[in-house]
Image 1 (tube, rainbow, N blue to C red):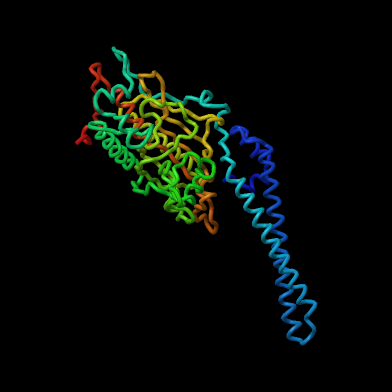
Image 2: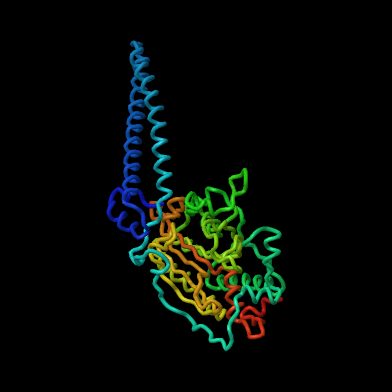
Length: 415
């Protein structure tokens, strides 16, 4: 959630920053108005309660002196009625403020470029040159079907479209990738954690998936539970409503989970193959850090994901997302895009974001800063999307006869 105090203090700064994310000034003016109305109502409520305390003391003194208390008794009674009414009004204004505030995205950093969409993103650097094939490289879909690795029809039969069955060496390769990614991340100082694949609404609210992206979540009927869209939710919320010891920072975590997304709004996009699935495996990086260290930790996370791809021999590039393509909760994001030779284009395989204190304010994750409790900064990133890494290996390591070599670093995991 954005800093409402900053909105009140420097409205123009907030409005200008959020222009990059196409947030209207009128909406922010409404949020500012709601904030002022709530504060005014709260002040009036506190004044009424202070007056009630004063009247209660007078009531006791007058009663003890034996004087007539009927007039004062009526005044106390009427004030209680006013307090109850004002409490209801204040609660309503607080809820309206919260409901609106939760729909406002995070402020982008000043370094985020202007732009409308992915076409305006800025390439930072390219790592490893794409391989030159002396034959026409095939798409992972065709390779997988021919080898008996990927079974799309049975995925639909046992579930529905956008679910795939991995068989034979594809299943082994996925397992090898997960193990290798976790080992690689652990070697970079990220502690491995195993978390549930089901989460509650409080956790989704804390990391910003709710209420904004509810239509993209798989909800468990008649329960306050959802299938996770990413383990970022679970790893970050491990510290929800907690005060972390400053000496423990940064806390760097990695986890493998299945992830589930309805892919709402993606009808007709990437329907062929495994690019866009309802269920996919992902290895995640999450960091909880001191605000002064978040830029440094952000670079570490980008390097970790990029170096992992390099170790697999996969050509990729780093892209700085523009304001129009930046995610709801992100202040800054670097996407890592892997080269797919069949389509001769780069596709996103990792997204590393610095969320600053946006999630920490929603989830109340703090650290002891001298005598005060201050909000931490949270960061998250894919390291990596396992299915897309599998695709990239299939396409980049394919041979003319349709077989696929296994990267050297994965061979010991292929048992």
